[in-house]
Length: 210
Image (cartoon, rainbow, N blue to C red):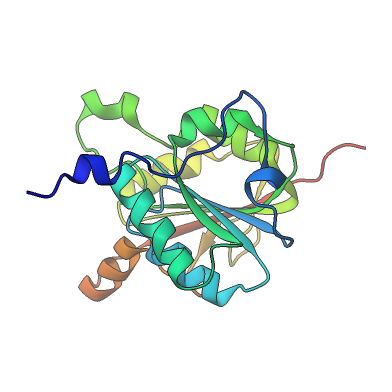
């Protein structure tokens, strides 16, 4: 029987240390985009094709999918500018430097747990948002989408932040009718096929004070 635990034991990781320079992790040139939880990797693979000027970094907590998707990126010739590393974003983001280094951050369909006792496991919370705001460049974008209305309402409340401005289709609203990035996540594709409504929220990082 194939030992999958051994196969994924050497999943790609960030370097050791409390302060990691993103330029060392992603040495290619170009704007840096960050995906939290790429899972099976459809979005980051499609985005690598749609945005050849961008560097793409995915942080995926599962060893299996970080290993598989990172390998797929290499196999398609994107490995010099697109990676998926096996990391818990809540632990990894505080280690990343410098501030104002990420052009866009994508969070697709997070927090798939329904029971109240699972609330402590939720990915998108105040601490994660604070780290994303720190890492985003001035006018950088934060994009969150979900097919669960209650989650969308929670995220919209969470993202009322003094350094984030709604950046949707209408003034003062974060809501987008369509995905503008030329790439879909696996769950987004399923939602589209099943006719499920998806709430898409986009925010702009306000400029830092000189």
